[in-house]
Length: 182
Image 1: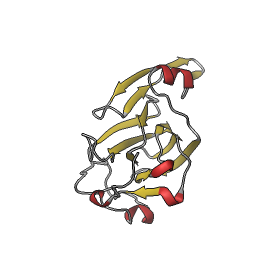
Image 2: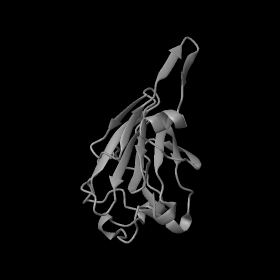
Image 3: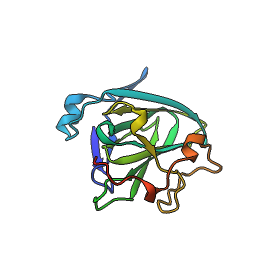
Image 4: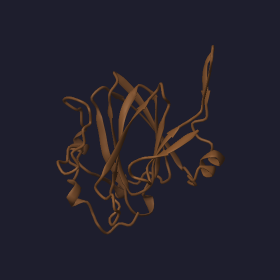
């Protein structure tokens, strides 16, 4: 397994060891001991899966307070552009984002700790996207930033994005609450 710091040090790009043979392949998508040895000492409490069609943009989602979530993200099918926006007030990278293409071929992952808004766009015909969370889903603590906020200026690499009504009603980046500590 190889773990690389992104441009925002707290966010990590992860490349698991893949063992291919004539039958297919094997990989460990998560091994607590190996991730701890690599400095990612977290406890996951929930796994989520979504299936989306090409052009879908989901996000930018986050949770606040005791239910803030760290996420370990990867795809099983297809290709997505995964985006993490630093919303940690006082951080030197506050308002900056990093992105990476997660693909079924590379089987790569991204780790984002609590304090990041998260979203992805689907670049393949369809994608099955998976993520492990360090906090439970909490409707009262969920928040979102509008995907096309001009201040963030994220290039989602899709034309005519498909966005849920809920995500279209999200706040602008400068409207997010400043009283939550991650």
